[in-house]
Image (cartoon, rainbow, N blue to C red; front, side):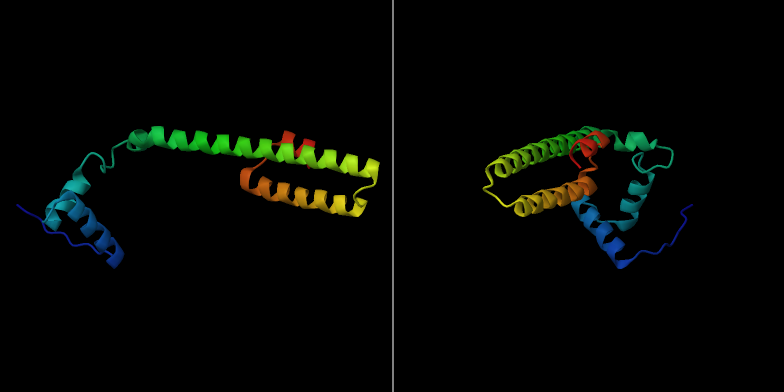
Length: 131
């Protein structure tokens, strides 16, 4: 005995399903939905970890890449700060740059570090050392 069920979709959801049907080469909406809902990939008893498992290498690579990028950015910020500090020391000793100008440059860099802290979540060690 076949049972007929009706459900509502938004226009966007319908377009998305129709696009997935087209990509899968399916022509019958009911067959497509039945296969999609009853497949192990979409079954309720599937462990969420098992759903993510095929994507795990990509996810880990993205995390490592982001952490490396963050570490590299922090290292560059440290180098910039040290360079600015050296310029400040040299300029103060030789009176070649006005103290107010150098102070403003250092303030701008500290503002940049504050922005970086919001984006990268700088470590407490870094903050103690440079902020």
